[in-house]
Image (cartoon, rainbow over all chains, first blue to last red; front, side, top):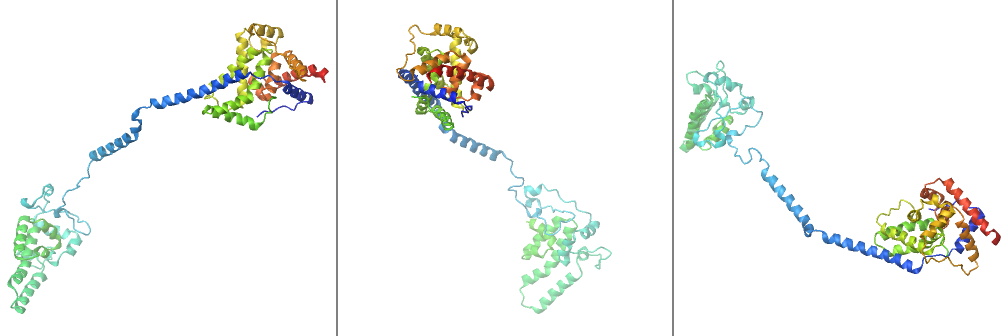
Length: 256
Length: 199
C-alpha cells in the first residue's frame, strides 16, 4: 500500500500539474508487441503442460491395480509362511483329558495297549507307577476330589485302618459296605425277582467283583490286566465303564 | 490520459492479476499492462531525456521481463514496488552498457548528456511541444526535472509516476528514508521554481 508523506500544498500542486501535463505513453505498436509476447508465453505454457502430460507413461493408469495386486500377493505369502498353531488339528485322545475339579498333584497316564495307541498318545511316556507297597499310600495321597468324587468302592484305606483281611488283596481294596451291599442286593434281587432276566442280574452280580478286580489291577499298575478285565466286563455288562469309579473312567475310555 | 490515483484496493488487485496471469489468464496481464504502461514508459522517458526510441526499448524490455517472471512472482511485496524495481534495474543496465556506473555517475549532468548522446539512435527525435495549455508547463517541468540529479529525479519519478511510498523507494534504492525525503524535497523545489512565473 502506498503511503505518501503529508505533502505541502505546493508539492501536491506540482504533482497534479505533472500528472495533468504528462501525456506520454507508449505507441500502440509497442503495446501490441508486449501483449503479443504475453499471449505467446501463455501458449507456450499450455504446450509445455500438454507435453508433460503426454510424456507420462501409459502404465500410470495401471498403478492402482498393480499396487492392489502387490498387496494381495504379500498378504497371501505371509499367510502361507506364518507358522501354524501348535496342536492345531491334533486329535485329543481321552487319555489326555484331565478330570474336572482341582488339578491332581500327580498326573498319571495309563499306557494303552499297542493296538489302541495313537501316534500322539504313543509319544507320552508311561507313568511312573509306584510299587505295590506304596500303592495305597499313593492312592491315599491323591487329590481329595478324586477320592471324594469316586465311588466308595474306590476308596483305599491305609493298611492299619483297613478292616478287611489281608488274605485277599481284592477284598482288602474293596470297602466293606459295598461288597456286602452288592451281595445283599443281589441276594434280595434273586429272592424277590424269581423271574428276573438272568443276564442283567448275573451281570449286575458280577459287575462289582469285576470292577473290584479292574480297580485293583489298575491301582497296582497292572494296566494290561485291568484293561483285560474291563474288556471282559464290557462283554457281559452294558455300560461297563459306568460301573468303574470315576477316576478310572478316563482310562477306560482309552481301552479298546 | 492522466495516471489514475493509487489505492490500496487496486494494489492488492494488481498482485491478484499477476498471479492470475501466472495461472494462465492472459486478460489479467492486459489489464495490468493498461494500468501501469504509462507510468513505466514516462519513468524511462524522463530518465533518458526524452529519447523515445530508447524509452521504447527499455519499456519493452521491462514488460518482457515481467512476462518471463510470471511463474516466479510472489506477492511478497506490492506489485508496483516489484515492477519499478525491475524498471530501475533495467535502467542501470542501460547506463552500464553505455559506460556509466549507475545513478551516482549519472548525477553529473554533463555525464548524463554524454551518455544519452552515445546511446540515442541516430534518427532520434526531440519530444515535440504539445499544442495544449499545459504544454509550456510540462516543458518547464520536464526541463526542471532534467536539471535535478539522477537520484533526485529517480526519487521523484518513482514517487509520482510509480506511486511508490518513501519506504518502498528507500528499499529499492538501498537508502534511508531520510535520504529519499531529502532528494524529493530538492526535486520539488526545482520544479516549483520552474512553475513560479507561470502561476
